[in-house]
Image (cartoon, rainbow, N blue to C red):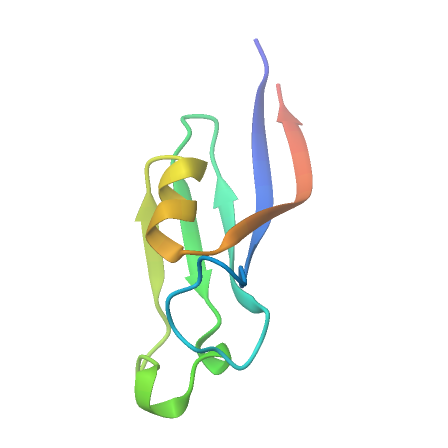
Length: 83
């Protein structure tokens, strides 16, 4: 049995991103074979008054949840087959 692990970027989406950001890269994440996704947030992409004070990682149940929750678009970076 094999499964995939995916690394991805969360990018600003002109039509969907709900906050003003200063960078196209909102965050980066990993999706495990279970479908669960963890996203690290690029705090520097957000204006100082809107950014968190400390590093933050969010957990989502799927890619669709990531897109809905972030208002960003997902771009695959790397996929690995886990055997």
